[in-house]
Image (tube, rainbow, N blue to C red; front, side):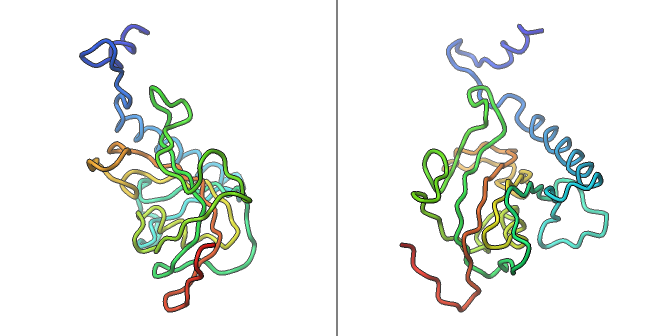
Length: 195
């Protein structure tokens, strides 16, 4: 059995290892399990987990699992408003993929800071919510300033089924973001410059 796994992971050259073996299947399976586990956590009363339907859909009970974003709240804020689709946000973030052949913790493909997050040295990044992938748009419209979430995004609400030449993210990738909402501004409000 082990031999079959090793052979499947190798490409035509013995020195080359395929990084993302059966990637769509791996991501589909992961998402199904994560969605079911999160539903159970919520049913058991764990308020730190959320299932958020894609921002443009009304949750009428007929939405497929891959049209949800899964959220694990690491730091919550009880009151305050959330950004709107037309707002600009200031965030700290780090994005990674599921574990793969060479990356046991998942390949870190993007981040607003190098290394580990340090509030005293990390500089947040500004984004217009409307320009982001649908998974981010969905999560941000539920976050409050000061919250820290781990956000899980299925590939259809992330970078999709086709890999662009400029992207390090392969097609069919579940995205996992460590996301902190620092601040936000409504359309028409003056956005403070970064310091």
